[in-house]
Length: 333
Image (tube, rainbow, N blue to C red; front, side, top):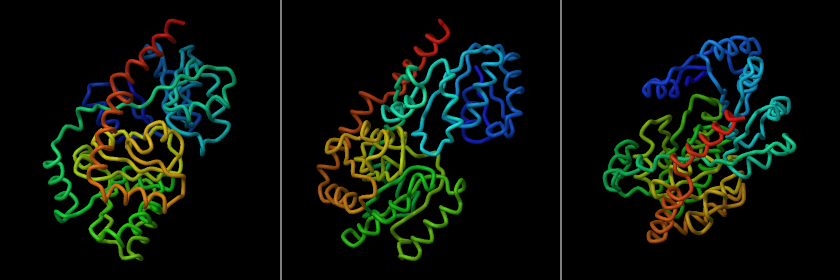
């Protein structure tokens, strides 16, 4: 087994710590000339199957390389394909197996692959990563964000980007501040990938004098502790197939309030583990959050139900078993 990546970063560090061989291929993601090098890497490494993640030009190149050296290719689609070029999506039909992370994502994939089978395997997380006690987690979060003890903490998790739509999250908090002056939004996610958008959101915060109510913590490796110390998760993405951030929030016993896009209704059960609101309905988001802020018993009940849902339907071990079965079936063919 080995992992090929287009650049160094957290993934390289993670696989290195696990002892998994890796290879960083410069400009792999966009350039056709990477195909011969990929094909050679597959042959020299004596790999039996090639496994691609997401629908990108890099994954397309990996598929072509696999076909050139007659290796099966499994394509794992983790997105909604909204911004993907049609000529890249067209390559999906040549995969030996296709996995989608939600029914919503699979429905779009099927529009491009005809009668080819598409397996749905939800993302999974390690529930044991979310076992810190509430009091310890709360103290940790307050110290990390520099917040007073009486803060009401709502959290948004994800790369600060136009797709994740943190602008809407800030607008929601702006509406909440009038009724709950102590509410604080913690935005946890990289500010570097879309610097222009990140600055736009920060300028909005400054313009509307929300500096005391919105904190940006950038990319973190202590997300489980931060989530377990918060009160509510807000998710305002424009599209999302099966975001791990929501699963992590549910594992941390947080009720989730999210826009009704992509595969999110398959994760958040409206009224039972959180609330799902039509996309763009800021007033509806505010109303749902107010309901939770005014009723700590409701927050606790929905949070516990969310954790149970993760245990029942989004366990990492179950995800791994499902993927392994698909790999075995491809190799058997």
